[in-house]
Length: 224
Image (tube, rainbow, N blue to C red; front, side, top):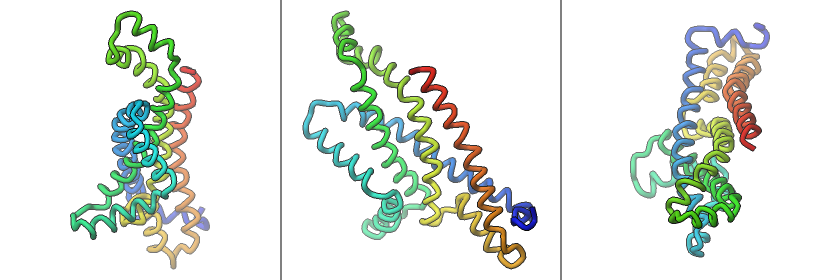
């Protein structure tokens, strides 16, 4: 394995540094997903409102998120807004804001689709039983919506984890940045280190994302 350069990971604290970088990516993902789910539920409910103004606002929001690359959003928030408004924004906070901004739009659209997929007869039946609109949502609509959303929310976690690799562009030392640092530090003694180190990074991402994807698939089949 020495020819592949994997041995450099076991020099000093290199492997621990790699795991530390992975934890940075996972931490940013988990915080962003938690915020996205909470805000996404509210946004999704507002997307189903009859107000034309709200529909236009959220449609524009969703299109901005879908059209603009996350890297551009990171640059705008971290480099652009700090100069324009003069505030002190650290890179991790900027990353969480951008991924939450993106995740909220994605989650809101999922919530909107889930709410609209509930048959109208369930609304009518609940109202016939004397429930007010708040009770209809709380006891009938939301429980079914949450059940449908759990597998989709879990898939959002894997997408977040993979997308956090972009945060290295604004100086956050996550797993890919650490991998690059290890490769650069051992370029002369282990010229093939890039292959081995990035193969291990791939394996680490796989070990995190694959079980999550399997769980989402299992829940989707069980609750379909």
